[in-house]
Length: 348
Image 1 (cartoon, rainbow, N blue to C red):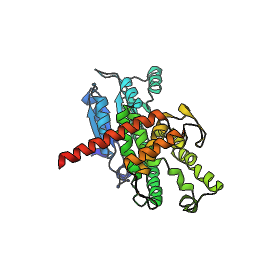
Image 2 (cartoon, rainbow, N blue to C red):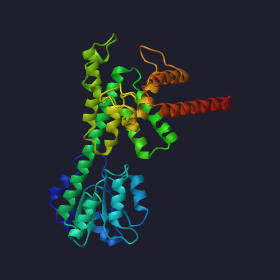
Image 3 (tube, rainbow, N blue to C red):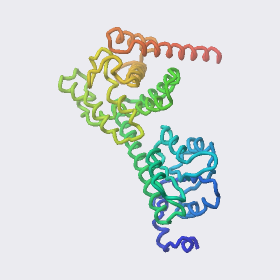
Image 4 (spheres, rainbow, N blue to C red):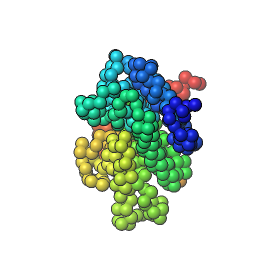
């Protein structure tokens, strides 16, 4: 019956984007339109094709709904009663939590002004109503496949980084500890949520470039030759290049490239000094060093938090670290350890 309503051939059902990908959950699509009858044709078609469809009216709660539910695509009417569709699109594309969600804007009228505004707010497409069935189906499928491809690439990179971590560590949990520390310290510093997200993601992929370094060099127990040392230094450049395709993770690239720079300019790969080193890279290198010092490894015992802070202080005196960031981090760790001690006493 549904085939007849939309003029579909019996074979169309076999080409459903969801039916052909049984291992994936159905893509979730949000339709934003004030008029229920206006939503109905798109809803029925998308439901028939196997998508999970949600509908909301155009009010101020749309932005929060998208942030909280993370649909795979938004079909957004331009003319809404309480808010402007273009403004909603702009807000969603500017927020790091929702910037990669495809947005198709729609309107009854098709004019140059609408299409210009779609480009201005970074909308992914523009369709006129009533929708052409084939056009809507094709655009939705294409945009969702692009989104899932990007997500797949990101997950592959994270998985590779996990393998690399387990190669050089028995526990393989260092990245998780750095990520947790990054979130806590970022909140302590009151930096933006996006900056914290960049630090957390960097915790998982900052050394992914080591995938190109032979085990004989990376895991060598003895002293490295100059050639081997230079080879290892290339991992930051390789890691940056591997992560460049991640459109929504561009803020992570400076962390990957520069987390081995030193405050006095003696680091690598670019020999940056002082505040020429990106701020997040300055913060991240402290988190990474502290985690490494306080972690047990096959060749060493874990240092205590106090011992680790002393080593970082020594490196700061040598000119390697930003004294201000180290001072903030030291205060943060001491406050954290004091809180743990008080909680331990309360449990006795």
